[in-house]
Image (cartoon, rainbow, N blue to C red; front, side, top):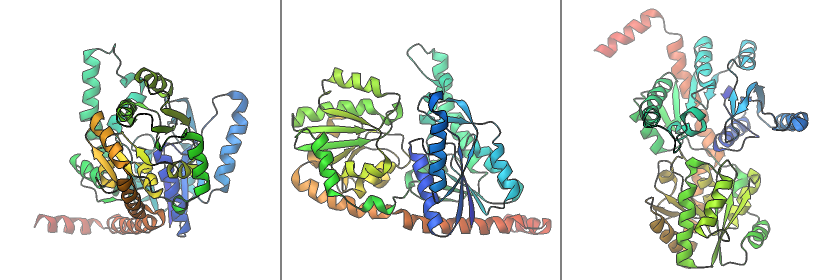
Length: 431
Protein backbone atom coordinates (compact mmCIF):
# COMPACT_ATOMS: atom_id res chain seq x y z
CA UNK A 1 0.00 0.00 0.00
CA UNK A 2 1.23 3.50 -0.84
CA UNK A 3 0.32 5.88 1.97
CA UNK A 4 0.64 9.67 1.91
CA UNK A 5 0.87 11.34 5.33
CA UNK A 6 0.30 15.10 5.43
CA UNK A 7 1.37 17.07 8.50
CA UNK A 8 1.84 20.70 9.52
CA UNK A 9 4.85 19.87 11.71
CA UNK A 10 7.54 17.23 11.81
CA UNK A 11 11.07 16.77 13.00
CA UNK A 12 13.21 18.68 13.94
CA UNK A 13 10.26 20.32 15.73
CA UNK A 14 9.77 18.58 19.09
CA UNK A 15 6.15 17.74 19.92
CA UNK A 16 3.58 15.00 20.27
CA UNK A 17 2.24 15.11 16.70
CA UNK A 18 5.65 14.88 14.96
CA UNK A 19 6.57 11.95 17.20
CA UNK A 20 3.26 10.22 16.46
CA UNK A 21 3.56 10.71 12.69
CA UNK A 22 7.15 9.48 12.61
CA UNK A 23 6.43 6.35 14.64
CA UNK A 24 3.34 5.45 12.61
CA UNK A 25 5.20 5.94 9.33
CA UNK A 26 8.20 3.86 10.36
CA UNK A 27 6.13 1.00 11.75
CA UNK A 28 4.06 0.86 8.55
CA UNK A 29 7.27 0.71 6.53
CA UNK A 30 8.32 -2.30 8.61
CA UNK A 31 5.07 -3.98 7.54
CA UNK A 32 6.07 -3.50 3.90
CA UNK A 33 4.12 -0.36 3.01
CA UNK A 34 5.51 2.66 1.15
CA UNK A 35 4.97 5.75 3.29
CA UNK A 36 5.59 9.30 2.09
CA UNK A 37 5.46 12.02 4.74
CA UNK A 38 4.77 15.52 3.39
CA UNK A 39 6.22 17.87 6.00
CA UNK A 40 7.11 21.59 6.17
CA UNK A 41 10.58 22.95 5.59
CA UNK A 42 12.26 24.41 8.67
CA UNK A 43 14.90 27.13 8.69
CA UNK A 44 17.35 28.04 11.44
CA UNK A 45 16.75 31.24 13.38
CA UNK A 46 20.23 32.51 12.52
CA UNK A 47 21.05 33.12 8.82
CA UNK A 48 24.67 32.15 9.37
CA UNK A 49 23.70 28.56 10.16
CA UNK A 50 20.86 28.29 7.62
CA UNK A 51 22.64 26.06 5.10
CA UNK A 52 24.13 23.78 7.75
CA UNK A 53 20.77 23.48 9.54
CA UNK A 54 18.93 22.55 6.35
CA UNK A 55 21.58 20.02 5.35
CA UNK A 56 21.35 18.27 8.74
CA UNK A 57 17.57 18.09 8.44
CA UNK A 58 17.69 16.72 4.90
CA UNK A 59 20.42 14.23 5.84
CA UNK A 60 18.21 12.87 8.61
CA UNK A 61 15.32 12.61 6.15
CA UNK A 62 17.47 10.64 3.70
CA UNK A 63 18.55 8.06 6.26
CA UNK A 64 15.02 7.53 7.64
CA UNK A 65 13.01 4.50 6.49
CA UNK A 66 10.02 6.65 5.56
CA UNK A 67 10.25 8.92 2.53
CA UNK A 68 10.04 12.60 3.48
CA UNK A 69 9.13 15.37 1.03
CA UNK A 70 9.41 18.92 2.35
CA UNK A 71 7.07 21.65 1.20
CA UNK A 72 7.75 25.36 1.62
CA UNK A 73 6.63 27.08 4.82
CA UNK A 74 6.27 30.73 5.74
CA UNK A 75 9.14 32.55 7.43
CA UNK A 76 6.99 33.61 10.37
CA UNK A 77 6.76 31.09 13.22
CA UNK A 78 4.40 30.62 16.14
CA UNK A 79 5.67 31.37 19.64
CA UNK A 80 6.31 27.68 20.30
CA UNK A 81 8.45 27.23 17.19
CA UNK A 82 5.81 25.74 14.90
CA UNK A 83 5.91 27.03 11.35
CA UNK A 84 3.01 28.25 9.24
CA UNK A 85 2.73 26.06 6.11
CA UNK A 86 2.70 27.81 2.77
CA UNK A 87 -0.64 28.88 1.31
CA UNK A 88 -0.22 26.65 -1.78
CA UNK A 89 1.99 23.57 -1.13
CA UNK A 90 2.95 23.00 -4.77
CA UNK A 91 5.39 20.23 -3.78
CA UNK A 92 2.50 18.08 -2.54
CA UNK A 93 0.38 18.56 -5.66
CA UNK A 94 3.33 17.86 -7.97
CA UNK A 95 3.95 14.47 -6.36
CA UNK A 96 0.27 13.52 -6.52
CA UNK A 97 0.22 14.33 -10.24
CA UNK A 98 3.12 11.94 -10.84
CA UNK A 99 2.25 9.13 -8.42
CA UNK A 100 -0.77 7.13 -7.34
CA UNK A 101 -1.45 6.72 -3.60
CA UNK A 102 -3.86 4.27 -2.00
CA UNK A 103 -4.59 6.34 1.09
CA UNK A 104 -4.12 9.86 2.47
CA UNK A 105 -3.59 10.16 6.23
CA UNK A 106 -3.79 13.79 7.30
CA UNK A 107 -2.79 14.87 10.79
CA UNK A 108 -4.15 18.43 10.93
CA UNK A 109 -7.52 19.92 9.94
CA UNK A 110 -6.09 23.33 9.02
CA UNK A 111 -3.50 24.27 6.38
CA UNK A 112 -2.77 20.81 4.86
CA UNK A 113 -6.18 19.53 6.00
CA UNK A 114 -8.32 21.09 3.23
CA UNK A 115 -5.69 20.16 0.63
CA UNK A 116 -5.95 16.52 1.78
CA UNK A 117 -9.72 16.64 1.22
CA UNK A 118 -9.23 18.18 -2.22
CA UNK A 119 -6.69 15.51 -3.22
CA UNK A 120 -8.91 12.75 -1.90
CA UNK A 121 -11.84 13.93 -4.02
CA UNK A 122 -9.70 14.54 -7.10
CA UNK A 123 -8.04 11.12 -7.10
CA UNK A 124 -10.91 9.18 -5.46
CA UNK A 125 -8.80 7.86 -2.61
CA UNK A 126 -9.79 7.64 1.08
CA UNK A 127 -8.79 10.36 3.53
CA UNK A 128 -8.04 9.36 7.12
CA UNK A 129 -7.68 11.99 9.83
CA UNK A 130 -6.18 11.61 13.31
CA UNK A 131 -7.69 13.98 15.88
CA UNK A 132 -4.42 14.73 17.69
CA UNK A 133 -5.17 18.13 19.19
CA UNK A 134 -7.90 19.94 21.07
CA UNK A 135 -7.51 23.16 19.10
CA UNK A 136 -9.72 25.20 21.39
CA UNK A 137 -6.92 24.96 23.98
CA UNK A 138 -4.27 26.31 21.59
CA UNK A 139 -5.75 29.58 20.34
CA UNK A 140 -3.24 31.58 22.38
CA UNK A 141 -0.52 30.73 19.85
CA UNK A 142 -2.23 33.04 17.36
CA UNK A 143 -1.52 36.65 18.50
CA UNK A 144 -4.90 38.07 17.52
CA UNK A 145 -6.69 35.52 19.75
CA UNK A 146 -4.38 35.91 22.75
CA UNK A 147 -6.07 37.10 25.95
CA UNK A 148 -4.11 39.40 28.27
CA UNK A 149 -5.00 41.56 31.25
CA UNK A 150 -5.58 44.44 28.84
CA UNK A 151 -8.00 42.51 26.63
CA UNK A 152 -11.45 44.05 26.38
CA UNK A 153 -14.62 42.27 27.40
CA UNK A 154 -15.64 42.17 23.72
CA UNK A 155 -12.46 40.37 22.75
CA UNK A 156 -12.81 37.90 25.61
CA UNK A 157 -16.36 37.11 24.52
CA UNK A 158 -15.27 36.74 20.90
CA UNK A 159 -12.44 34.32 21.77
CA UNK A 160 -14.79 32.31 24.00
CA UNK A 161 -17.29 32.11 21.13
CA UNK A 162 -14.58 30.85 18.79
CA UNK A 163 -13.48 28.23 21.34
CA UNK A 164 -16.96 26.94 22.14
CA UNK A 165 -18.77 27.38 18.83
CA UNK A 166 -16.55 28.03 15.82
CA UNK A 167 -13.85 25.41 16.43
CA UNK A 168 -16.27 22.56 17.27
CA UNK A 169 -18.36 23.47 14.20
CA UNK A 170 -15.30 23.49 11.93
CA UNK A 171 -13.99 20.22 13.38
CA UNK A 172 -17.37 18.60 12.84
CA UNK A 173 -17.44 19.85 9.24
CA UNK A 174 -13.90 18.64 8.53
CA UNK A 175 -14.29 15.21 10.13
CA UNK A 176 -17.53 14.55 8.28
CA UNK A 177 -15.70 15.04 4.98
CA UNK A 178 -13.08 12.44 5.83
CA UNK A 179 -13.59 8.72 5.29
CA UNK A 180 -12.27 7.67 8.70
CA UNK A 181 -11.43 9.56 11.89
CA UNK A 182 -8.91 8.11 14.32
CA UNK A 183 -9.03 9.15 17.99
CA UNK A 184 -6.01 8.62 20.26
CA UNK A 185 -8.27 7.65 23.18
CA UNK A 186 -11.83 6.64 24.01
CA UNK A 187 -12.43 10.01 25.66
CA UNK A 188 -11.51 11.81 22.45
CA UNK A 189 -13.73 9.54 20.38
CA UNK A 190 -16.64 10.47 22.61
CA UNK A 191 -15.79 14.17 22.28
CA UNK A 192 -15.72 13.86 18.48
CA UNK A 193 -19.20 12.36 18.45
CA UNK A 194 -20.33 15.31 20.55
CA UNK A 195 -19.30 17.58 17.66
CA UNK A 196 -21.88 15.88 15.46
CA UNK A 197 -19.40 13.67 13.60
CA UNK A 198 -21.01 10.60 12.01
CA UNK A 199 -17.98 9.53 9.95
CA UNK A 200 -16.69 6.05 10.92
CA UNK A 201 -14.27 6.43 13.83
CA UNK A 202 -11.80 4.15 15.60
CA UNK A 203 -9.40 4.42 18.53
CA UNK A 204 -5.70 4.32 17.65
CA UNK A 205 -3.24 5.57 20.29
CA UNK A 206 0.27 6.64 19.44
CA UNK A 207 2.52 3.64 19.90
CA UNK A 208 5.94 3.18 21.45
CA UNK A 209 8.71 1.56 19.44
CA UNK A 210 10.52 -1.44 20.89
CA UNK A 211 13.45 0.62 22.12
CA UNK A 212 11.26 2.21 24.80
CA UNK A 213 10.92 -1.18 26.45
CA UNK A 214 14.66 -1.79 26.75
CA UNK A 215 16.33 -0.63 29.94
CA UNK A 216 19.85 0.64 30.57
CA UNK A 217 20.27 0.63 34.33
CA UNK A 218 23.74 2.15 34.06
CA UNK A 219 22.56 5.28 32.22
CA UNK A 220 19.60 5.69 34.53
CA UNK A 221 21.87 5.49 37.56
CA UNK A 222 24.15 8.14 36.06
CA UNK A 223 21.17 10.46 35.50
CA UNK A 224 19.89 9.89 39.00
CA UNK A 225 23.32 10.67 40.43
CA UNK A 226 23.55 13.86 38.34
CA UNK A 227 20.07 15.25 38.99
CA UNK A 228 18.90 13.57 42.18
CA UNK A 229 21.15 15.78 44.33
CA UNK A 230 21.48 12.96 46.84
CA UNK A 231 17.77 13.05 47.72
CA UNK A 232 15.72 9.95 48.44
CA UNK A 233 13.30 10.56 45.58
CA UNK A 234 13.73 11.88 42.04
CA UNK A 235 10.52 12.99 40.32
CA UNK A 236 10.23 13.93 36.64
CA UNK A 237 7.94 15.57 34.14
CA UNK A 238 8.34 15.88 30.35
CA UNK A 239 6.52 18.33 28.07
CA UNK A 240 6.83 21.59 26.21
CA UNK A 241 6.93 24.53 28.59
CA UNK A 242 3.76 26.16 27.32
CA UNK A 243 0.58 27.58 28.82
CA UNK A 244 -1.67 24.63 27.91
CA UNK A 245 0.54 22.21 29.89
CA UNK A 246 -0.70 23.74 33.17
CA UNK A 247 2.76 24.27 34.67
CA UNK A 248 1.49 26.89 37.08
CA UNK A 249 -0.53 24.20 38.82
CA UNK A 250 2.39 21.75 38.68
CA UNK A 251 4.79 24.17 40.39
CA UNK A 252 2.24 24.97 43.09
CA UNK A 253 1.75 21.24 43.53
CA UNK A 254 5.49 20.75 43.98
CA UNK A 255 5.41 23.38 46.71
CA UNK A 256 2.69 21.32 48.41
CA UNK A 257 4.80 18.16 48.08
CA UNK A 258 7.61 20.01 49.85
CA UNK A 259 5.29 20.70 52.79
CA UNK A 260 4.68 16.95 53.11
CA UNK A 261 8.11 15.53 52.25
CA UNK A 262 10.43 18.32 53.28
CA UNK A 263 13.85 18.19 51.65
CA UNK A 264 13.61 14.53 50.63
CA UNK A 265 13.02 14.90 46.88
CA UNK A 266 14.05 16.70 43.69
CA UNK A 267 12.08 17.35 40.49
CA UNK A 268 13.53 17.18 36.98
CA UNK A 269 11.65 19.19 34.34
CA UNK A 270 12.48 18.06 30.79
CA UNK A 271 11.38 20.22 27.87
CA UNK A 272 11.63 23.74 26.55
CA UNK A 273 9.27 26.46 25.43
CA UNK A 274 8.23 30.07 25.55
CA UNK A 275 7.20 29.87 29.23
CA UNK A 276 10.59 28.75 30.55
CA UNK A 277 11.78 32.09 31.94
CA UNK A 278 8.40 32.82 33.51
CA UNK A 279 8.27 29.38 35.15
CA UNK A 280 11.72 29.85 36.66
CA UNK A 281 10.50 33.11 38.20
CA UNK A 282 7.38 31.37 39.51
CA UNK A 283 9.51 28.64 41.08
CA UNK A 284 11.54 31.32 42.86
CA UNK A 285 8.42 33.08 44.12
CA UNK A 286 7.14 29.76 45.48
CA UNK A 287 10.51 29.13 47.13
CA UNK A 288 11.09 25.84 45.30
CA UNK A 289 13.87 26.96 42.97
CA UNK A 290 16.22 24.52 44.72
CA UNK A 291 13.72 21.70 44.34
CA UNK A 292 13.48 21.79 40.54
CA UNK A 293 15.95 21.54 37.67
CA UNK A 294 14.97 22.79 34.21
CA UNK A 295 16.98 20.41 32.04
CA UNK A 296 15.78 21.66 28.63
CA UNK A 297 15.12 19.37 25.67
CA UNK A 298 16.47 15.84 25.69
CA UNK A 299 16.74 13.70 22.51
CA UNK A 300 13.65 11.50 22.30
CA UNK A 301 15.79 8.37 22.22
CA UNK A 302 17.26 9.32 25.60
CA UNK A 303 14.06 10.28 27.41
CA UNK A 304 13.47 6.70 28.56
CA UNK A 305 16.69 6.77 30.60
CA UNK A 306 15.51 9.87 32.48
CA UNK A 307 12.14 8.26 33.09
CA UNK A 308 13.81 5.08 34.29
CA UNK A 309 15.95 7.09 36.70
CA UNK A 310 12.88 8.57 38.38
CA UNK A 311 10.47 7.26 41.00
CA UNK A 312 7.40 9.13 39.81
CA UNK A 313 6.12 11.01 36.76
CA UNK A 314 4.23 14.24 37.49
CA UNK A 315 1.58 15.51 35.07
CA UNK A 316 -0.89 18.37 35.21
CA UNK A 317 -1.95 19.04 31.61
CA UNK A 318 -5.67 19.01 30.82
CA UNK A 319 -5.30 19.59 27.07
CA UNK A 320 -4.02 16.17 25.98
CA UNK A 321 -5.83 13.89 23.56
CA UNK A 322 -3.70 10.99 24.78
CA UNK A 323 -0.44 12.09 26.33
CA UNK A 324 2.35 10.14 24.65
CA UNK A 325 4.72 10.85 27.53
CA UNK A 326 2.36 8.99 29.87
CA UNK A 327 2.78 5.78 27.87
CA UNK A 328 6.54 6.39 27.78
CA UNK A 329 6.61 6.76 31.56
CA UNK A 330 4.68 3.51 32.01
CA UNK A 331 7.07 1.69 29.65
CA UNK A 332 9.92 2.80 31.92
CA UNK A 333 8.07 1.39 34.91
CA UNK A 334 7.44 4.87 36.32
CA UNK A 335 4.00 5.43 37.90
CA UNK A 336 2.12 8.64 37.09
CA UNK A 337 0.33 11.18 39.25
CA UNK A 338 -1.91 13.32 37.04
CA UNK A 339 -4.97 15.53 36.94
CA UNK A 340 -8.23 14.05 35.63
CA UNK A 341 -8.60 14.92 31.93
CA UNK A 342 -9.72 13.47 28.61
CA UNK A 343 -6.93 11.27 27.28
CA UNK A 344 -5.14 11.02 30.61
CA UNK A 345 -8.04 9.13 32.17
CA UNK A 346 -7.84 6.56 29.36
CA UNK A 347 -4.25 5.51 30.08
CA UNK A 348 -3.85 5.97 33.85
CA UNK A 349 -5.78 3.55 36.06
CA UNK A 350 -6.35 5.30 39.34
CA UNK A 351 -4.69 3.39 42.16
CA UNK A 352 -3.15 0.84 39.78
CA UNK A 353 -0.40 2.34 37.58
CA UNK A 354 -0.69 5.78 39.17
CA UNK A 355 -3.14 8.22 40.70
CA UNK A 356 -5.66 10.63 39.19
CA UNK A 357 -6.90 13.63 41.17
CA UNK A 358 -9.06 16.69 40.77
CA UNK A 359 -7.29 19.94 39.93
CA UNK A 360 -6.47 20.77 43.56
CA UNK A 361 -2.83 21.11 44.50
CA UNK A 362 -3.22 19.65 48.00
CA UNK A 363 -4.97 16.51 46.75
CA UNK A 364 -2.49 16.05 43.88
CA UNK A 365 0.52 16.44 46.22
CA UNK A 366 -0.97 14.03 48.76
CA UNK A 367 -1.33 11.34 46.09
CA UNK A 368 2.26 11.91 44.95
CA UNK A 369 3.46 11.29 48.50
CA UNK A 370 1.18 8.24 48.77
CA UNK A 371 2.58 6.80 45.55
CA UNK A 372 6.13 7.17 46.87
CA UNK A 373 5.44 4.85 49.81
CA UNK A 374 7.64 1.82 49.26
CA UNK A 375 4.79 -0.69 49.16
CA UNK A 376 2.70 1.35 46.71
CA UNK A 377 5.65 2.23 44.49
CA UNK A 378 6.64 -1.40 43.92
CA UNK A 379 3.10 -2.48 42.98
CA UNK A 380 2.58 0.52 40.72
CA UNK A 381 5.89 -0.02 38.92
CA UNK A 382 4.84 -3.56 38.01
CA UNK A 383 1.38 -2.40 36.90
CA UNK A 384 2.92 0.39 34.79
CA UNK A 385 5.01 -2.10 32.82
CA UNK A 386 1.97 -4.30 32.17
CA UNK A 387 -0.12 -1.32 31.03
CA UNK A 388 2.60 -0.16 28.63
CA UNK A 389 2.33 -3.37 26.61
CA UNK A 390 -0.92 -2.05 25.16
CA UNK A 391 1.05 0.72 23.45
CA UNK A 392 3.64 -1.24 21.48
CA UNK A 393 3.82 0.46 18.09
CA UNK A 394 4.31 -2.82 16.21
CA UNK A 395 0.92 -4.09 17.44
CA UNK A 396 -0.86 -0.81 16.79
CA UNK A 397 0.55 -0.62 13.24
CA UNK A 398 -1.13 -3.93 12.37
CA UNK A 399 -4.43 -2.49 13.59
CA UNK A 400 -3.81 0.69 11.59
CA UNK A 401 -3.12 -1.38 8.47
CA UNK A 402 -6.46 -3.15 8.92
CA UNK A 403 -8.28 0.18 9.34
CA UNK A 404 -6.71 1.52 6.13
CA UNK A 405 -7.82 -1.57 4.22
CA UNK A 406 -11.38 -1.37 5.55
CA UNK A 407 -11.53 2.33 4.73
CA UNK A 408 -10.27 1.67 1.20
CA UNK A 409 -12.91 -1.00 0.61
CA UNK A 410 -15.69 1.31 1.78
CA UNK A 411 -14.35 4.10 -0.42
CA UNK A 412 -14.05 1.76 -3.39
CA UNK A 413 -17.64 0.62 -3.05
CA UNK A 414 -18.81 4.24 -3.18
CA UNK A 415 -16.27 5.54 -5.73
CA UNK A 416 -17.38 3.14 -8.46
CA UNK A 417 -21.14 3.18 -7.86
CA UNK A 418 -23.24 3.99 -10.88
CA UNK A 419 -25.97 6.57 -10.65
CA UNK A 420 -28.50 3.73 -10.67
CA UNK A 421 -26.68 2.03 -7.74
CA UNK A 422 -26.85 5.24 -5.75
CA UNK A 423 -30.58 5.61 -6.40
CA UNK A 424 -31.21 2.01 -5.33
CA UNK A 425 -29.15 2.47 -2.14
CA UNK A 426 -31.03 5.67 -1.30
CA UNK A 427 -34.37 3.96 -1.90
CA UNK A 428 -33.39 1.03 0.32
CA UNK A 429 -32.34 3.45 3.09
CA UNK A 430 -35.78 5.09 2.96
CA UNK A 431 -37.48 1.74 3.44
